[in-house]
Image (tube, rainbow, N blue to C red; front, side):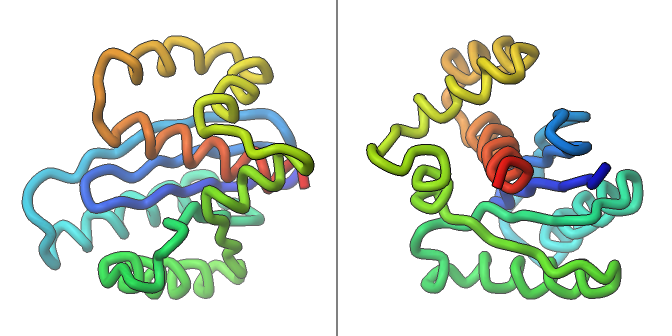
Amino acid sequence: MAVTLGISPGPCHVGLAVFKGKRLLTYRTKTLYGKWSNKKFSRLMYEISDFIHDYKPDAIVIKVPDNYSSYDRMDRTMGALNVLCEREGIKPRTYTLSQIKRAYAKTWEPSKESLIGMVILKYPQLQRDYYQSQTVKTKYYDRLFEAILVGFVATNA
């Protein structure tokens, strides 16, 4: 069964989700403290590389912002992710939130909340994390659910 790694990188948090076939194996968010720097960037790449090493994915999918071409940190991050993937012989695929929404619903425009609700129906263990996300308004849980959503889209395509 194919292993898929979903990634949602950001300047403070990176969401990671691993699927084996359509089964959600594990998921987590790594927090990166401090101002953006080379050291922080290296830490981000280390965390992702560690997940690649541990789970040996066959596919890597990355959630990128809808307007990521104008986002310098994302350009640098994507360049480094491409190098990591190339070393593993994997061609990463990227999805924006708009593409994820279209993959879920062909005839209507779902909100991010409704997408998360659909994923929670499939994976009830996410419910606790979703409730936490409602009380703690940080990007921590956004990155987590984006990684799960992008992995879910890739495994159900």
